[in-house]
Image (cartoon, rainbow over all chains, first blue to last red; front, side, top):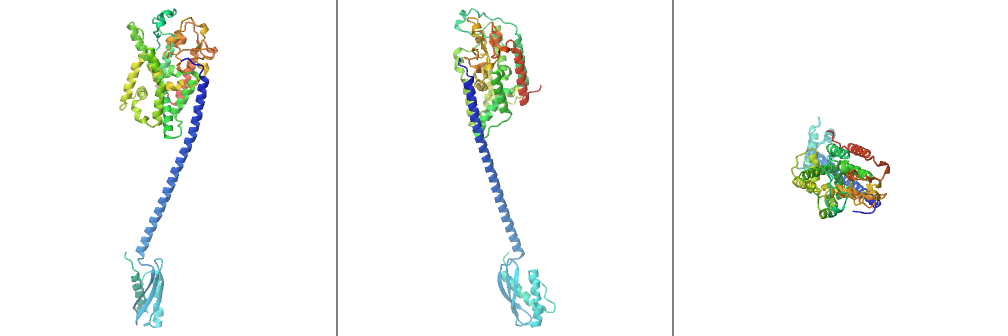
Length: 161
Length: 307
């Protein structure tokens, strides 16, 4: 093929190809960056979701543990049991899966002296967070009465485990 | 690997200077060329396929919308293109393993024909004209296949891959049956026309042909010094190329010339020259420089095979 000198047109074409190539490269690198960022975001969101699920699971486990450890529903419960000379009525307040308050409403059959001593069992119950405590020596029947009344009240609150 | 092939043309009888050529022992330049070609075949046979793989990878990246890679294949492509812009298609003429294979096959074909007192084979003009746009079409086809992501399905069809694996002495070619068949057909075609693959089937050649080869590297002749009715350079050119004319080597398609130097060796008036007058008569030194430069490039790219 005989043609005029083709150097200049070819050089211009080559430069044009370079310009197009550079333009494409810039665009493609943008796409790549956007793609990588997208992947990073997805990874972050997935990690966040995983953390949330893990937290939820842990909380549920803890709740189950606490429930197993103290299977009594929060609330205010009243019950009676026999003391020395009559029934002792107590009101027990359960809150946050703890025994928070024990109030003796009536103890008609107890002598004040013995009752005064017996009240110490309330402290023991609150400390042990359970009705399985020893009665107070010297006021056995009165303290046992208080204790059993508390136990009866807590039985009202018992949950099925 | 050089033969004086004469294109049969109707006006042969009217050309007084075209005496029938007898077989002569190869001249020095032909020996040099043979040595260089053999060296590159042994030491750096995968230059061609690496560069072409660079082309494919660029367009596969475009097909995926990914940034263009700058790996060793693309670097090889860039290096060979730069080399071609500076020196013309010297790589094709001296260093390409496919071209060397073509020269070998055609040389054998010519010798066989000569033994039977027959003229060397050449394709008819019509066939040549028909096949000339084929390299560009093949290049376009490969580019489209790569950009559309279909190239991986066609991998078994590539005769270039088969050839480069054979050059690396890897013979586990299962799954490449279509490629092997095509390569065999190409080798058969190489016996019918010098540089059959390079002229009609090489997509890398299509890439090189489109490059802006620097004017100084374009071979040209001074028409005023030519013998009347000679056209020997045209007839012996394996690529069917017509030399440029004038001071800037104009009026020729510089992309066709593979710098084999047969025209320069055969010109009865030593009229063929490059664009740098100081180089006249010293082309062999330039050949040595070019060979070392290309070897250096191959080494830097990691394509040099230590025997």
